[in-house]
Image (tube, rainbow, N blue to C red; front, side, top):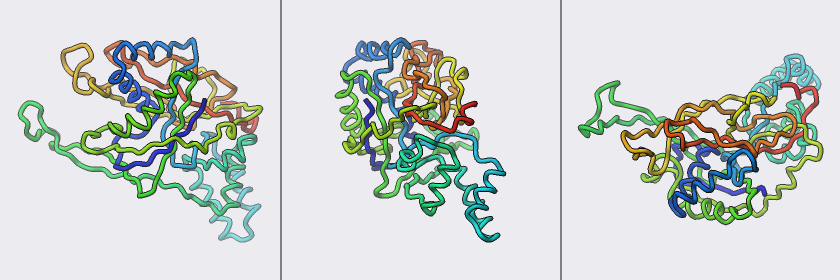
Length: 337
């Protein structure tokens, strides 16, 4: 079962709304509401033998999906594309400039996805963009970098080492901006827990860093208009990730991808109390992940992958890099990563 939820940010986000962090928040919700035993029983379901009971996507601009990561058009293809549509020199170079800007786009409108899901490649996408006048109607967040004083936990004063400052990035959203979040539930018994987590627990407690100071405030509701069957593909030859992806033997799966290094840290009580006593150890080991939009060729059963272990000095702690994927049929000559 694939569901979609709409999210309205009510305050800036310091922590990006990404799949693995959402999964961590969900685990802490189980721990706080049902206890340690319930959380351990839930995590045992991600054993690599059965499909994962619950998976989250990352948050995307409303009405958009991650653009599949495929090689850009060659110089020859780009030239031919512009020449076929432009009658004079100025228009030709203008078309090339527009195509260059399209290469950097990370999102694709759902209307384009539906139109191209049976025959996807970048040229077909550019034809859609060119015919529609290159509209871009999604609201990106605005990044703000702020400086903060570094406080000594011993003296309570500003630390002079390194200038006594550190920087943090906030993401601000315009009034009326909204995001889409997808949830895959393969265990029907978890549906009410997921709905409660998204529509009640998360809005009440906040998301990510500095939520106690008002950051990460969200309004979330289920999108009942969403029809997952509209994204189905009869003869798909690839799957596109809606989540950050990292799992055992990931490199053996043919794919196109962008790499992302996740420097994660523990949440909940473990952010300020060591899981096993002693000094607080909130930071996980770096995890190399595929960004959203990674294209996996064939029809791999990625939902059966186990959680990543060995990501922290406490062996009980694991990391979720199991992605939600959507089917897609892409041009055959591109299916050789």
